[in-house]
Amino acid sequence: MKQKFDIIISTCVPLPLENVDTDQIIPARFLKATDKEGFGDNLFRDWRYDKDGNPIKDFVLNDPTYHGCILVAGKNFGSGSSREHAAWAIAGYGFRVVISSFFADIHKNNELNNFVLPVQVSDEFLSELFQTIQQNPQSQVKVDLPNQTVTNISTGRFEHFDINGYKKHCLMNGLDDIDFLVQNREKTVEWERSNK
Image 1 (cartoon, rainbow, N blue to C red):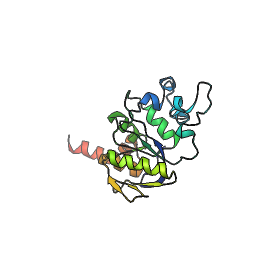
Image 2: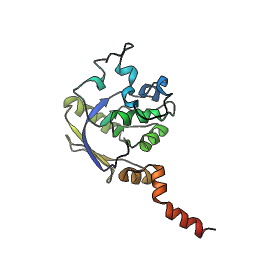
Image 3: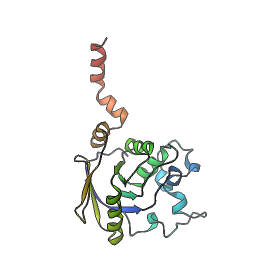
Image 4: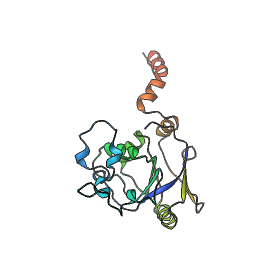
């Protein structure tokens, strides 16, 4: 899942539902696993499949019209429990970006820790994205991490988004927290020596 992040241009998968919580993203019965592998298969499990395991045709992830590595979700995405498994499932499915007008804080950080970029936009911009995707599922969005902008290519409209500087550095360099510490080991040792 570790990938350097720079600029992504992709079609989008729309999920225009508000208050999508982590139990809807990955149901609790799948939380026994401690390995990140395979979680993408169960992303939105109870919305994707019926009780017999058959795909529910009208759910967006089962609709071949929509594809891409950007999930556009309704307001208040990732609320509920703090399970990191929800971010594992999003990353495991292949999403690199989630765009919403509001994220639950813990889930937002879990996404960042799993190399998924949460992009928070205004309600108006989000509404425009949903309209654009509905009108043309092949329309693309450009997410530019270095400049912290997200652009609706169809309309040319863009917005800036915020991201913690440390997390931006880690995403752009493909580093998790441990990688960052190892990379800066000598600086840490030197600091300890000079502060004794």
